[in-house]
Length: 206
Length: 288
Image (cartoon, rainbow over all chains, first blue to last red; front, top):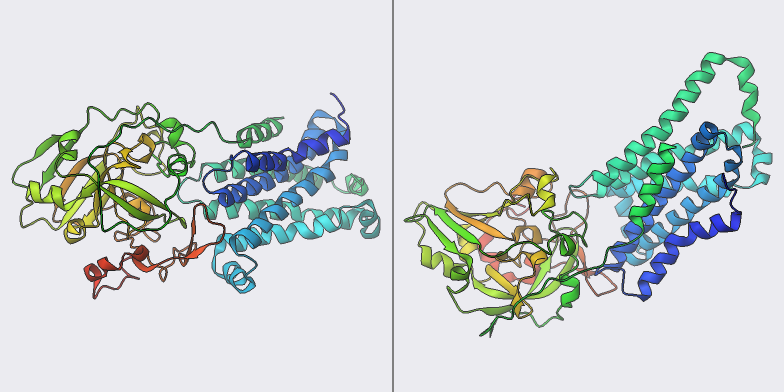
């Protein structure tokens, strides 16, 4: 397998926002640009969450262990698109009306779910550095970063709760997420059966 | 590996909209202006013909303008039946000739929270009612969209129950604002906007303005409209635009007028106060 340079992958991760900018200048944001940007950034947040969650199964199943080197970048891009998505809501939808936003989070379940999904990503972004791994210790860091499962679940629920009638796309994400979590569940079951000696391997600072 | 492939598939799908097409239309002659028209800024035709909720073709806003390109709108028969002296099957062009065409520039408010201003062409539905003379038992009018899954890919999915059904109380249907519509921007309706014949009910949420009508039934039973059937707690029969009655999952207090940056407050009955008398004494929170 080709080992791509990090800058290339970084640039690729920026393509969705570059495409949005291109579309803005070429009248390609549809008749409702704010809605299009909101949906697009939301989709890409979920996509990058899925890609990030796919790193571990893919690297283990294909034995391309070096893939883990890209996991942090991919996870931070999920947070990046999540920030863009939240900014679109806070600025272009609510125009920074704080009381309205608090009312939304309290009264509109899909916004509660979305806001929860975002909040769960914040500590992960803040502790994404090697320094944090060192400070927290591998085991605690890994436990904290399992919050990404909850964030992804909240994100999919957010999507399902906002569509009018066509649940095709939310269901697709749910199925994909289900598979990615199922993999981890199976791994966890197996490690329980193997017991003590395997637990030492948890200190792998992947 | 399957996860990676699935993700790659998602990535490709998200990479942008297909090229937009607006279908060719023919000019309508003899259009008269109407006192019911608003003076607000008209939404550009390009937006109204490429941003459509028309689930028979696609659940993506940009989908219908592509998927409806080859939709056949002639020959087109419209059946008028039920509580009428006799069932009649009209050629749609004979219905279009029933009265002189007017341009009605109406505000159009979608239940999702966006709105447009469209110069529709048509005449009051009451003109058709006058000509078919419904019987005394008729209390409601039920409209049905054509069932054509061969041409309408969305009808092959179960996102909604097909064919699409909508309805009005007879006095709502008799109101001069209720428009039997066959054109917009001076030309015949593009396929993605409901050709060849649709309703436009400017004081109600857009999904009530049923498209591609081929059945009109006068009945004594309140029609069970498709969106109410789909989610009865979210979509009702009346569906009057009402900033005080929220959708269970989102607020209806404001809307985004396409082309505008800031949202604007939603108006009761979409600003068409003249229909208020139809609902005097009714609890509009219960009868949403």
